[in-house]
Image 1 (cartoon, rainbow, N blue to C red):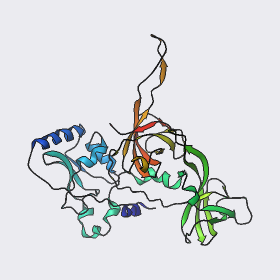
Image 2: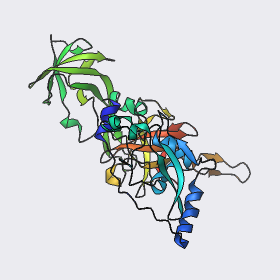
Image 3: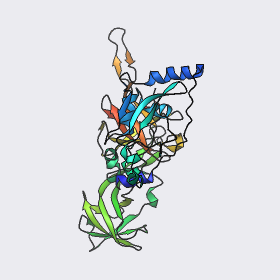
Length: 351
């Protein structure tokens, strides 16, 4: 799915706030708190560049980017005030005596009449589409209750036991029309919640992709690409997965204490801009845009002075922003990592 379609399908709706000029004691307190959140080298103004993300801009102004919703001021006089475009000038202003960030001058994308027709296609997103493109086309985690609802490969044309790019296969469980595309995945290892040892889902191993040629039950699909052989029982996942890219990074509204349970791509050491899976989802209060700190448990070392052993303190090792949430699992993008992250590292509310 193109970035244009993602932006068009995922508009943010925020309530505009009124600008009040008076200073009060409470406002001065808010000013002090907000100033503490500003980065030491925060600019008075910043011109939004092509390729910027909201996370990049928030990090330019703030020590902790997840405070952006608390300091962003929506100008009610600007069309689509919650959207930011390349060329917009963002500046630090006073609102109710507190320092806020607002759009002080709109770009040509926002102002030119011809650009008003499709302005959302140029709006910056919270994270880059390229950063999570692996999530759309590679192996994913399939929830336990989701598997039975997925279409599956029932046979290969020509009585072949396996299929690869160039082969025609027959699939059941889909009402897809000719031209619709699917990723083919093999159901891999079980994923167990480390908290209670309950089954959460399964690793989805990337097989390839195909295009529906004829609808029906079974439907006919041509495999247009493959990385390994497809076999009976492999599942189909639509190539177009709806992911909102226009959202504000924020701290979770409830306490989150979970763990990393998988990484898309199957590597064991996790770094910046890799997609991870957590054993927390909407059932636990996790939401799109939530930012979590990643912590690594301190090692147990031998105390050579007093004898015995001692556990070292837990250490913060990175930051993850959630971009897709299901009932019991959430997908996040690693925004920064001070050291290699690993599955079973802990995720908690940022401090």
